[in-house]
Structure formats: structure tokens, C-alpha cells
Length: 84
Image (cartoon, rainbow, N blue to C red; front, side, top):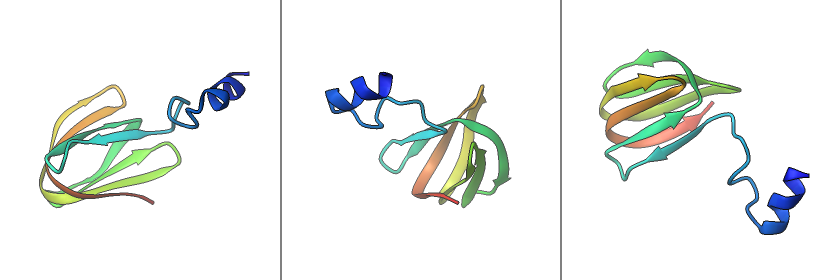
């Protein structure tokens, strides 16, 4: 029923629960939700384990600023985010 209402309102997958999600603030950092653990950490790449796979954040001067309950904040110059 929920899916039917969402589709009729035209929201598609925007408000449905997701395995993970991220918001990048320009190129200066971002917030990543649904993170289970940090797999790899360098100043050029941060690899995150999320439900269903691996999320790779690439850039320069990358740093983890905050890691809370399934949420992580990354600062630095983000060049790309790739799901593997």
C-alpha cells in the first residue's frame, strides 16, 4: 500500500527506505548513511562497507570527521563515489 501511495504522489524511490545514502556538499565533504564499517582509509580513498556492497569515496585530503551509528562524515576534496 505504501508503494502504491508513493508512486501515485510521484516520489518514486526518493522516500522509500534505502540500503545506504549519501549527500556530498559540493566537493568539500559529505555525509554517508548506512555504513557498517570502514574497510580502507587513506587520504586519497575511503572504502566503506554498506548493505549490499562496498562504497568507495575517492579524492584528496580525505578524513573521517565523525563516525556514529551507521553514519559517517567525511571531509576533503571528493572527486567521486562508486558503489562496487
